[in-house]
Length: 426
Ligand SMILES: Nc1nc2c(ncn2[C@@H]2O[C@H](COP(=O)(O)OP(=O)(O)OP(=O)(O)O)[C@@H](O)[C@H]2O)c(=O)[nH]1
Ligand SMILES: [Mg+2]
Image 1 (cartoon, rainbow, N blue to C red):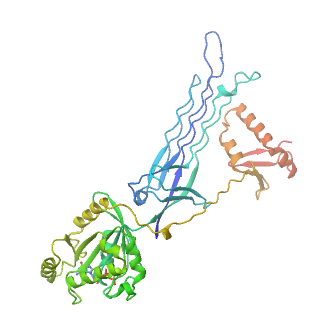
Image 2 (image 1 turned 30 degrees about the vertical axis):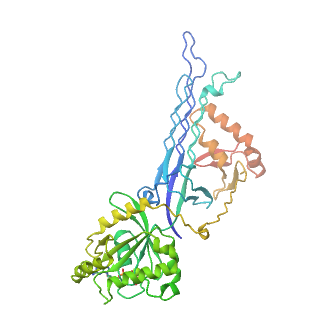
Image 3 (image 1 turned 180 degrees about the vertical axis):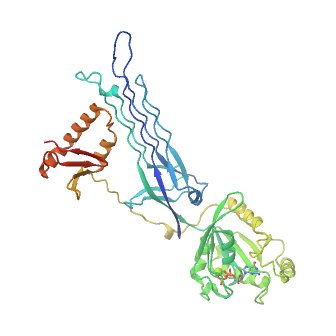
């Protein structure tokens, strides 16, 4: 099992601001409050699309920001809520908060959705703050900022396609030219000791996962060479690409190679004999290869063969189209073995947090912080006295004054909250 992962930044849209406005009426100098609420910011939502099977799209985009809500309008009109930003992901995607390492979503079913970053609530307009004592309030809230976080997006990959063949036929070279993977390549046997994976994207943007496996030799099914352990990997693929060194660079006969490898596959597991297979004649850039291919064709009869050269690139596009076409006809991971099931336990910490905390800065100032108090702060429109008074009341309500006093704050001491400073008044 291999993991494809990317880190992306997601941000919900900010809420729209509430509005301070008054009704205009004939003969009435200042009518009742009429400022509407701001609209909610859009959420960033991930949605499963079963047509996807890689995180390829995330390679090109690392920031996902939803739109902000509209500001409130006159005549108590609510600003429009922003549409969610929907991002498609393949089934099997998990999303983790980078900072807390909490798993936010485990997306498996087609069309399943999860909110990854919530949009901010819209601020309330002044129409909402009217009371008998203050019938024309000058208070409106700013919209709440949208949630912003870095997330780790992960997809456990199962290879769709496995590369099979004798050592040194060019399996790793093939992987290196059709994917971004950088496997070790050399002209000695068993260069590849463990499977390498790469994601192939064909010219028409269809993608699949390709596994480069260690070479097989006669007796592999009994453990000769790198044997068993890698035949197990082939078992999990939907399609086998059987690579043959058509140039016979090591003196073996291409047709005998073909028969030997197929014999190893079926001896290991009868089902592998029935696994769809595409034959690749590699190293066609070497002059002897043409002649060998002709006699190979005579012996295997009427099966499609794709002649290629990983050196010149000849035949690769055509082959990749054929592979993508073929995969569309084969159902996905029917035989996924039980051992693949990853029993993940998700622990969620949802402890109620204190509305604020206090520390002392180097310069002696009392520093207030915490999610709740910062949210109240961000929603306050500091250009209006009434909003500031309301903020002061909210701080008192949370117990800020009391806590500062307990900590020894005196009249005139500096209190800091984000980038805002004020004096403590007892
Ligand atoms: N002329 C020619 N040489 C090739 C071609 N493809 C691969 N080779 C060479 O063949 C040798 C073996 O290539 P690898 O890709 O390491 O072969 P492998 O099948 O991965 O081998 P193992 O990992 O040992 O099983 C290297 O020297 C490659 O440069 C080709 O199309 N033409
Ligand atoms: Mg190799």
